[in-house]
Structures are given as structure tokens and as C-alpha cells.
Image (cartoon, rainbow, N blue to C red; front, side):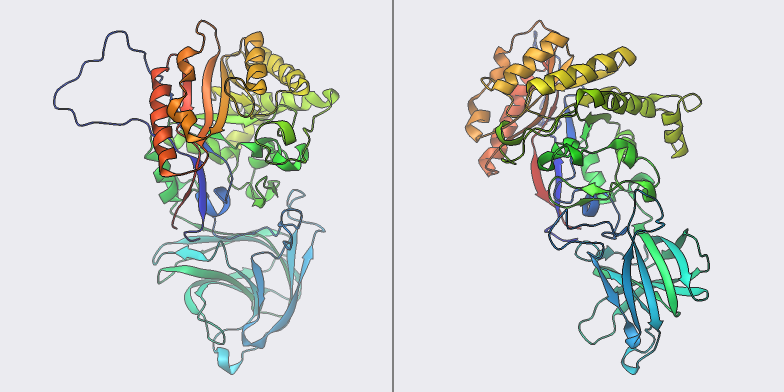
Length: 523
């Protein structure tokens, strides 16, 4: 990964401190600021999960990339065949008898001849190479865990050489950084593990997997993870620490339009239940923003990260309709109509919410979803408090009907949970979705309503709408996304000033993000 890698996150500035010459006393009549006012928003956009916050170095380790996601992509994306010593063989993508039905593709390596050639002394075998996300950034002396599911298909026992190397250019031996030998005997899928310790630092390493014997093997779910991750939970230490330093009070996830399929429609909706089990059982999917989600950073990891940073988790679930389509406010996917789930199928989406609450908070001794949490390594509850239903959908009659259906049933089953509603896209005064969203919130007496808006900087410099919002009702504001559009320096200043307006109205705005930005980071 390099400077082109983009990490997408909603950054928050918790407070602005001034050096005081003497003790200051708060003015009489001020408004108390919520201790949950500022947090972060994580959405998998611009490779912010795979290739970003998640520490996995292998790209497409499960061979699940598809041309549905991007023209020219397929199971072999990010991989190449290698044959040092002029060994020969061929590759075959297969789907019969996979490791798990949710992870259908795997690669079969047919090794026809293993030979050493005089220009490649010491290097032989037939195999595959992964280039990661613009190369693997590895450090001298650090330990890296290699894992893969392997199956011996044809021929006797196999030796497999797994190596981190630094390419040296055409016709030259790569520089060996570290290696391990894996012995393969089993004719059924088994997970194999080895530790590689590079002897030098390299930002452009590649991973080579070479079979040293004639025959055929199957390989899937290939991984190379640094042992040293944030609190041992699989996230990159530098990026996770950057977020921790913000001292956020909550995290909203997994989106954003990722929640309900975005421009692809509701078929591509994010399903939390397929992101909590062992990595090989998770269902991968097309990312709304045009690439691939392995879901190795899934709901279990999101909740664990919230616990590690002392943040309130704020998961967002779909409300039975897709993103807003052509007339919803952003016009991002102008040909996409708002897909809707038939009312006869809405009980599935009620269960999606209730089961999540029970997975997060339930007793493993009495609840099957809570037992899954415990089996994954977290027997104590996560103490989920907030649950968002919907994400800036157009507040159409279809949305209202489905939102009510979910809201009323979840509240009956779990009245202790605080449901966060949505005011639609472009949520501010004189927007029809804003008006419809607030009308629905008042009708249902919702505790919090999520507002989103992206406007020119003069909106943030001049608008002070929360000064005039009517008080007295139950519903408070959750300012989930806001930003000045042009991403110039003046926009950053305008957003910062706007946060003072938010703080001044903290009796009404319970939670807020700083603003949405896309920031480059160096690996």
C-alpha cells in the first residue's frame, strides 16, 4: 500500500483547547454538552477496510473477485502464476466441494514438472504469487502469520515453500526476505499455518507460494497477517491508533450506502450475520463503491474495536428499501430506482434487528446468537445501546411503511434499545425528505433522528438552523454526516466553525460527527 491508498473515515475533533492563564468559570445559563457529542463514522469506501484499517496483506486471498465488481476482474485478480527454474504447470479455478458454500471459489494448481534452471539456482517449483495492495509493507524482525486452506488432490505428499520476496526486475532472482515450508498430506481441506519473519524491511514485497512436488493441490483463504496488530484484534496499529487519538465516543458502521446496496439495488445489501463467523465462512460481496469486500473486517471486529476504544457501537441496518436512486437528493446513481422488500418478507428484516441485539447483548446460555458471540471469543455482552434503522433513504411512502413495521416490533421486543431514525438525504430545512422524516419521527416519538447534508461552504459559514429548531419534543438530532462540498481549505474552516454551532445547541443535538473527509495515509 502507498500514498495513493485512501482511508475513508468521518473524523471528529473532540475539543479545541486554549492555553489558560487562570482558572475559568463556566458562564451562568450555559447548555450542558453531551458526553457522546463527537464520534467517528466508518464506511468501507476507497479501500478503507481491505487494504486500509484491516491488517490483512493478501488481496483476493479467497479468489472471490468477480467481473460483476469491475470489468476484467476474476478469481485470479492480484495473483499470477510463477515457475522459477522453468517448472511447468497450470491453474484452474473451481467451485466444486469448496471450503464453505459462502466462499465458493478456490484455485487448483496442477504441477507438471519441477526443475532447477542454472539462472535460478536455489529457486524451483510451480505456484502463485500475490502482490497485495501495491506490494506488501513488511518490517525486519516482525512476525507474520501465513494461513491457507490446502487439499492434496493428486500425487504423493507435497512440500510447499511460502516466501516473502522483493522483486529485483526481469531476469533476476528476487531477494529472499523470509520463508517457511508447509507439509501437505491431507486429501481433505485443512487449515495450515506458518510464521514468516523477514530479515529486512521492504515496502514492495510479494508473497510466493511454490509447490515443490509434481501433482495437484487445491488452495483457498490465503492470508498473511502481522502478529502485532492493534490490541491483538487484527487492525493496523497506526491507523487504529490515529482513530483512538481522536478520543471518539461512538462509532457508526458499516455505512453509509454500503448498508442497503447503494447504486446496485437491495440485492447487494450488507448482511451482518454473514460477517461474524470464521473468516472462511463469511459471504463476500461487491462493494457499493466499485470494488470488493472480503468482510474479514465484519461486525465482530467492529464491535471489538468499539470496545477497545471505549466507543458506543452504532450499527446501521437497512429499513427494507435501497438507496434513494435518481430523485433522492444526491443523484449519485441517476438510473437506480428505490428497490423495496415486499411487505410479506419484512419479518426477515425485523429478525435482522432483533437477532443483532441478542447477538450483542444476550446470554450465551439461553440465546443461540449470543452463543455465537461467545464461541467467537467474547462471552461478555457488548452492551449495545443504539441501533440505526435506515441510512438517508428517500422518505417515500414505501420507506415509511417498512420503517414503521421494523420500528414498532423492535421496540416491543427490546424497549431498552435507542433507535436512530433517518431524515433522508440532504436533510435540512425546506428539503421534502427532511420534512417527511421529521414528521415520521414525531409521529413515532423517536428518540433520535439522523440528519445528513453536503452543502457549499457558505451554508456552514452562515446557516445556524439549530438555533431555531423547536424544543420541547422528545426527538433529538444525530448529525450523522455533514461536509462542505469543494474540499478546499476554507471548507475545513467552515466545518470547524459549524461545530461550534452544534456545541452551542448541545441540548438538542445529542451526537455529531466532525465532517466526512477522504484522507490519504502512508503505509
